[in-house]
Length: 254
Ligand code: BTN
Figure 1 (cartoon, helix red, strand yellow):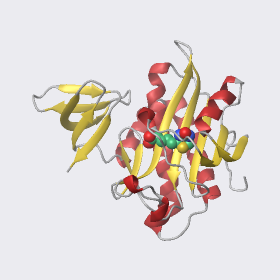
Figure 2: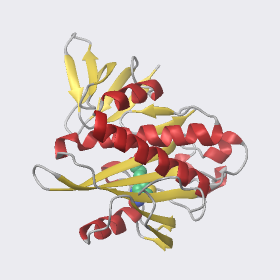
Figure 3: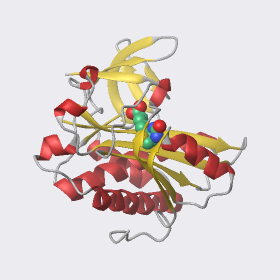
Figure 4: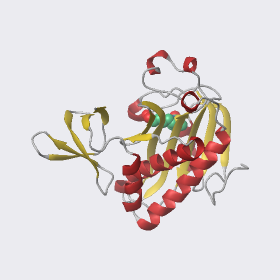
């Protein structure tokens, strides 16, 4: 904890050598009243989960697999904005740590050179009109070598070490992530989504591109106009109409 500069985030840290998923443990802790900024972190996950019920590869000792319990004053409708707050915080932390400007692919994939470095999973414990806790899962590929990735990920994922050329101090990087996360969450609570939106747009590789958005029941193609004040991705379809995308898997064509 020697690197931490935060007020609350990371004040309580539960550390595991191995666990099923830090996300599952964080849900239990949040149910049991864990405080704002509590961090669950594990060297390895045996059942790491990604968005849309996908598995998340979490090899031992080389990544950052952590879940943060955040208790902001938010309605469930605002919660997707917290995902974008987190994406901005992680991207700023990578920038400070390595000097590299990563890209954010809507809503929350962080890529370098088109390959995934970090995924973010936002889950809620909520009443109908008030969020009780956000369980923010961050999975970051840090010190993996090529052979640490399963075959199917070689084309689409990479690690910071592979990009930078030398190993990265994970403790220092975690401290930076928590620092920016606390800073931007506070900014968001005080000043709303406006400032976050500007930061997000600055890092986004999505705005202005041709996008294919795969949703549960349909697939649509259009040009990304940017994100709305609610954090919704706005697509201009070829017939000129504008559609807001709340949740989808997107592919970006050049
Ligand atoms: C995605 O891109 O699909 C999101 C991946 C989120 C992975 C992290 S690793 C820490 C936390 N625990 C999990 O089981 N998942 C998240």
